[in-house]
Image 1 (cartoon, rainbow, N blue to C red):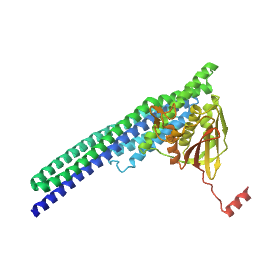
Image 2 (tube, helix red, strand yellow):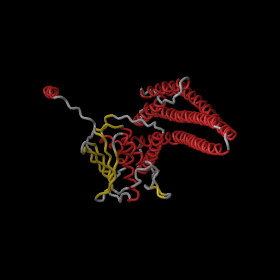
Image 3 (cartoon, rainbow, N blue to C red):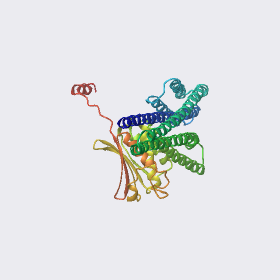
Image 4 (cartoon, helix red, strand yellow):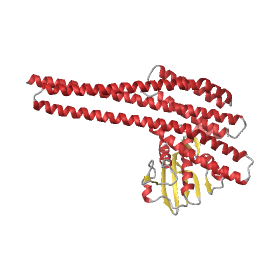
Length: 442
């Protein structure tokens, strides 16, 4: 009897170890499948952004005012290429042809960007079609093959786990007396069922999330970002250089403002997707808050919006693209949902750089304040902030925190105020002797 119980115990331990091993295999393959899905989406975004940069380099070569748009497009392309490089640094990155194919894609993309920056759009377009597109197709095919392979391995591992579970139940049924058999069978069955249920739930959720995210990012990039940027860029050229009458200027201004708002929403959605995929890159450098405010508010001032700028040079250490995105969201929020007057200022306070966007509107209700910086906050079917997708303030807060700052809201003396605090640029303190030499040289 003791020998039988011991044998049954050893058998049960062996079956549990086998089940755990199969579960670990499924988890490892699921991580690899997640990396494959995320990499495929990131490479697709990088490819689209490089094509966009080449497109705007043609406008810059023809003497238009598209050079600013070209620089922004090139910066976006470089940011997306950095995201692809970060995917290569993951521990889940497979060795062999896939890594070589992705590295080749990065090399070709960097060559196209270099030609676009050198104002050689024709060569850039030629190399994009002759080198970059074939490289992308190679990466896409290899990643798709890897997806199919991983899905097959996961399915086989799940089937193997099911066979082990059934064999365990059969062995225990015939090896132990009724009481021991029943107790051990119940415990083992519950554990196996729970493990399988959790693993299937996680795997199904990961598959759905990866599929939805890839489809969303790819569709958004191809269907919205490029045409929106084109509309905005050409409307800027028309407003700056076009010989338009007053009515046409007003209509083009509406087109420009609408494209800017949609582009801001797209930027927020893409930033949220990159944050969720842990692929958002922050490049801190010396940034003048006053200059960034001037860049963002230029279209508003041209449209004769009632903006009161009270800025002075304030140097911070932050990512300029993220700073502009935050300022754009705060100013747009104030103009859309605030009062008639908007005051924008920046200064140094208590060792921090502080940017303030205030309006004389009614502000946010006490109920909405609790969820003001949460994603997709809503009340029933109505957004807490009308006319928004519920991302702007949440994304702005996350971007600020990634740069060591924070956004706060308060309503005082009739003014709804959003304040952004960021670290100041570190000041270099010279030794006394070096300072004396500088003064003498001066």
